[in-house]
Structures are given as C-alpha cells and as structure tokens.
Amino acid sequence: MKKVVIGLSGGVDSSVAAYLLKESGYEVIGLFMQNWHDADVTLQGDCSYEEDRIMAELVAKKLDIPFNYVDLSETYRKRIVDYMFNEYSKGRTPNPDVLCNREIKFDAFLEEALKLGADYVATGHYCQKSEEAINGETIYKLIAGTDNNKDQSYFLCQLSQKQLEKAMFPIGHLDKPEVREIAKKLDLATAQRKDSQGICFVGKVDLPTFLQQQLEAKEGNIIEIDKSFKKYNRINRTTDKTILSKPFKYHPLDGKIVGKHVGAHFYTIGQRKGLNVGGTPEPLFIIATDVKRNVVYVGQGKDHPGLYRPALFIDKEETHWVNRTLKLEPGQSSDYMVRIRYRQPLQKATLFCEEDGMYIVFKELQRGITEGQFAAWYNTDGELIGSGVING
Image (cartoon, rainbow, N blue to C red):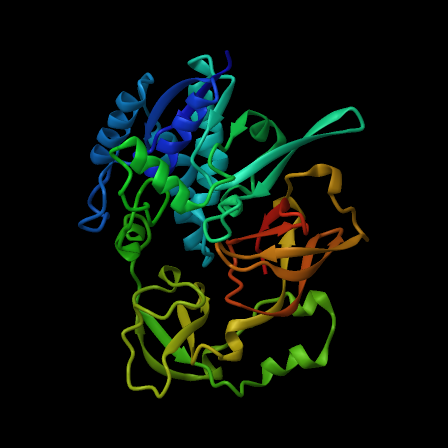
C-alpha cells in the first residue's frame, strides 16, 4: 500500500483531498505545518494558526488517519519572508505564494514527509497532473484544474520535475461546490469554513506594517502623469519587442505633485487604495514607482495608458520550464496562452527566446504588468509549460 502524506491546513480542500486519498486505498497521514508565529501584523478576525491546527486535527480524527505537526517557521522566514523584503526594497512586487509552493510545500515539507516514509505528498490544490513517456523518460505534466474559477496551477508554476514526481492533487478534477458538498456529507469540521486569504501561511496583513519590520518608512512625492504623456506614443511607433517590453520610465518633472506617500517600496503598479489623495475627477491608480528617487507616479482612471503594456521580459536566469521537452532555444519562438496573475483569463501571446532571456509579446495590451510577479504560459490543452519572474 502506497503511503501519502497530505498537508492538512485546516481548510476544506485539504480535508476532502485526504478523504479521497483514503477512499482510493492509500495509507494517508495528515501533517500540519506551522510557518508563522508573529500575530502582530495579522489583521483582526483572520484565522490563527492555533485554530487551523485544531480544525486539521479534528478532520484527521474524523477520517481516522494519523496526525502530525511540524514547525517550518524558520525555513519560511529565510526563504519566503526575507525574499519578500528584498524584492520590495528593490521596488518589485513579489509573489510569495508561488515561492511558498516551490520552497516550502514541495521542498521543506516534502523532506518532512519523506521522513515519515511517504511515497507521495498531496495538497488541496485545484490542479491536475499527468505523465507521459518521451524518449524513454517519464515527463510529469502540470495541468490546470477543472474548475476554471479555482484553478491554482499558476501558484505551482515553479515546480520541478522532481517535485511533480512526488506530488498528488486529489481534488483537481472537482469544482469547489462539489468539494463543499463532499465535506458537508461527511460532516467535516471544515465543511463551511471560509477559504484562507492573504499571504501564504501568514494570512491577511496590513502590508505597510508588515514591511516596516525591516523597511524604513520614508516620505516622498506622489506625482500625477497626464494621459497625453508623449512616451505613450511609442507603442504605436514600433514593433521592436525589446522596446515594447520595457516599463514606462518617468521623471519627477513629467507631472505634477498631488500628494505625499510613506515610501515608494510600499506600493505596487495598479494599486488604488492607500494613496490618501482625493479631489480628482477619476480615481488615481499607481502606474510606476521609483525607489531610488522615492517617487510614486499615478494616473487618473482605470484606462490610463500608463497601466497598459504590450510585452514583458524575463531574464534567462529566471526562466523555468516545467515541461523541459518543450523548452525554447535562442532564436526560437512559439505561441502560448499566458497569464501574469492568479485568476487572470489566459491571454494570447508569442514567446521569443533570445540569448538574454524570454520576451513575451501579447496580442492585446495587458493591464498592470508588474516586475517581480510571475508570468506562466500554457498550451491549448491546459498544460502549464513554463514560467518566469517578470523583469521588465
């Protein structure tokens, strides 16, 4: 009998995943991991890890499976939190959930599971896995979940073949309402529990308060850029992907001062809330930040041209192929479906592989392309082929 260690988080998804594994004849062990201790930055009303652990233990008892606990908070702080601080300090917006899966759930957690004799590690992600023999080698494929509204394959876009080999996703073929219904019929304690939100294993936080643990607040100017700014015309003047993929650059003299902020590294492109600037005909959105000059640039309206770009760039060192048999070599190009954030509908784009990295040119302008976030590309069958950190 194959042994599967499942990450019981205290939520409904991992609870039902554990049940399905047991029903399929696996020897199932529940393992709860604690990755965060600091409650000072967590918003009131957010579920604490103590409650999560209690719920996970109740589910394990209900399903009659062993329950174990591991504290990975030190590893989490080094690999995820320090990474976040470093990225924000450089004016980039990181995605800790993607890194959490690569560095914690399918690395540090996997190591703990193997100590328990696991053949596989399972999670409650809404995604699927398949395998194919290619040239005598088994290639593991990461496939989007059946529920388009809950598909979480994007969060797993940095997994390696070695990690996928050990991974199981028992609920990937189900819709969320089906998962809720199974939990309800089983009378699981997590059946009606709300989905977790916020930073992976930290929860909802006041981001400035969280970041100010290490990043100093520093007052600077908020500068408004008019929609008629001359540099926006470059999109209509060129087809050069190296130019199209570069973020818009502004100078303080390009606009007018409309307010003050507490530190450019606390803000991100597309952000609307937290500016505390009123009196404009249309809402203000952040279109760029400059951490060196400590300036935040804003524009009026969700259709402001500063929010939209046709292309992005991924450095070759930060390009990752989940299915390496489809890896592009310098000089090659291919059409894929791409998303630059979780739950974004897939966008048609062409990938161009060059010596310095990957250029992704979209068929339509994209709103809020943000450095530090991940772009992931899929084929038409829903397979996630690769991903990379947006550099430009």
